[in-house]
Length: 261
Image (cartoon, rainbow, N blue to C red; front, side, top):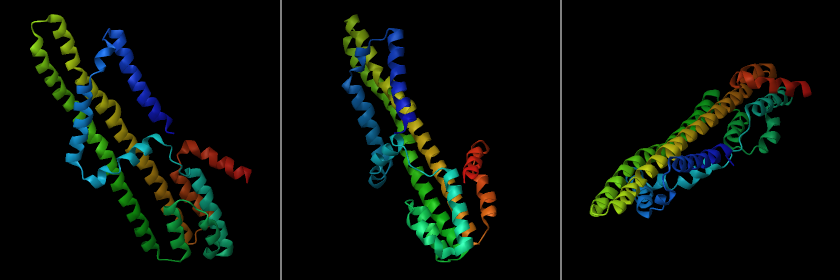
C-alpha cells in the first residue's frame, strides 16, 4: 500500500470538511447529486473526448500503481547483485551466470543479462535496453497525462456546475431562505471540481511522474551493470561505476553490506 497516497487523500478530505465546519458552512450542502454528476461524469466524458479507448483502459492499472507499493530492487541491492555477478563472471565465465539470472523476476533485468550471457554486441545490448526504457517512459507519460488533463477539466466543470446552480436559484428569488440554500448548493460543484482537480488529479499525475523517474533511474543502472559485465570489467570497477547511481546519503548502507560479507 502506498501510504503517502492514502494519507494525502484522507488528509485532503478531512481538511476540506474541517474547514467547512470551522467556517460554519453546512455539510449537508455536499449531498448534491447534480454537482457530483456534473463533475465526475463530465470529467469522465471530457477524458473520453481527449484520449483513445485503448489508453483509458489502463486507468485501473494507474489507480493500482498510485495505491499499491511497487516492489522494486533498491539501488544498494542492485549494486550488490552486480558485484556478485562480476565476481562469478571473472572466475567462471559469463555462462556461469545462467543460474543466478534464471532466478530473476524482473523481466527487463533478466532480458538484459540473457543478452550478456549470449555474448551479444555491446551497442546492440545498449540500444535494445534503452529503447525498452524509452517505450516505458512514453507509456508512463500517457498515464500521467490522463490525470493532469482531468485536473484541468474538473475545476472548469465546477464553474459550469455553479452557473447551472445559479440559474436554478434564480427561480427562487421570491423566497429569500430558499434562495440562500440554492446559492450555497450552486457552489458545491465549484468546490468539488477544485477538490478533484487540485487535491486528486494533479497530485496523482505528479506521483506517477515521480514513480516513473525512480523506475527509469533503476533501469539505467541495470543497463550500465549489464554492459560492465559484457565488457569483462572487474568487481572493483563495477562497484566504482555503479555506486555513482546511489545517493551519497544512502552509500553508508552499501559500506555496511561490504563489512558484513
